[in-house]
Length: 187
Image (tube, rainbow, N blue to C red; front, side, top):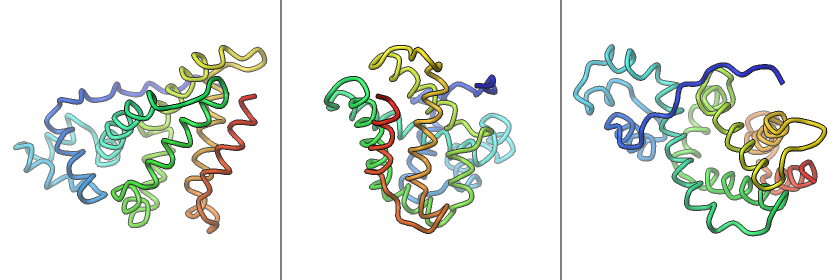
């Protein structure tokens, strides 16, 4: 797999602007940069200079939410190896699909949602691939015939394809199909 671009490290969870962005996203399914800047007590230009554009702010908020959810889901996961990885991906997709803010975000801003969540220019894609890669390495080990980051990329893309299936093809989201394919891919 080609070298990934350098993604900025996640904002610290106690960062006041991130906390405000998470609160706004959970409430509205969107981040209004002007309102966020006002809530943070800084100008919009300062907000963009320090934290990037709205897509980055949305990505950081979603990443903060996802890492919190993952920390809660991981200890409850069952199985081992491919089953554990597939079950964790299933749990995260299900949690995301049930989150009212994510449903609203995807429904009201589908192009932005796809860009923020799946673009190489965003902060989410590479972080998810890296997380799944570490999970594969710890649960399955380093694959013999392919490197873990490449396998993780395939797992993430399968998950995304079925999670965003309605936006992409008009067919309903199918998290169970994604899980079955991921389980088979990892065995």
